[in-house]
Image 1 (cartoon, rainbow, N blue to C red):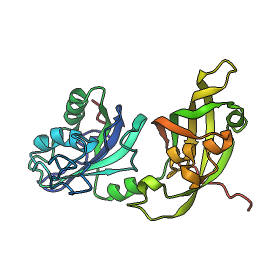
Image 2 (image 1 turned 90 degrees about the vertical axis):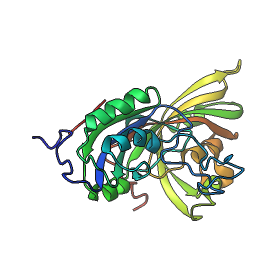
Image 3 (image 1 turned 120 degrees about the horizontal axis):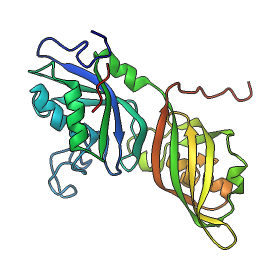
Image 4 (image 1 turned 180 degrees about the vertical axis):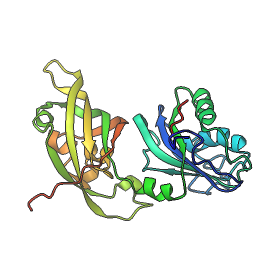
Length: 280
């Protein structure tokens, strides 16, 4: 039996089970993992109206609702390990994002991964799609979480006023290194550090223009290094990211919509400046 088949490497006894694959998130406002309320951490409070979470669903929970009965495992005995994560309001398109799903105390450890993918994809049509599910071992958790991918993004951007897009077109296909401090929006949970990340503008297109051809809304295609804060690369984050799309255009800009279009399989190293398969 080929190791690429859904049953290859399946666990033989009730225990901890691991399988890996890719997910495509086709909607916004769907977090990757359970979005516990930061005020009560799942206990229930006024902010979350006693729910304990800020969203009803997540990628993790949509998979678990099918997987846990299929594996005959306790409802909450699961963990989701992703190769990075997108923001809750960002779609994950293209070939999807790699992940490992971990289940404890599975009484049916040889459940059919093809059936799992089919059921999730049917239940979550137009929301979530699972691809390439296969068995794996615990070692894949660290490997998947440590993988670094350059990413291709699609953006819709709004400028505070009509702007000429020439400064962006002049930079097409040029790799530019940004200096990024930890954004204000995540500073409460991450260390305030400065990091260098490269971006490449791949395409720019005006979406709404005035009579003079200046754009108030436009689309961008960007390739960037692993760990780049794309929204802040647009806004500048009050000077915490330099340079930025806003700085190049001389007008404040915000990212209205953001999609991860693909993960580049071989993450491109920042240059030295100056020196089997189960589908549903």
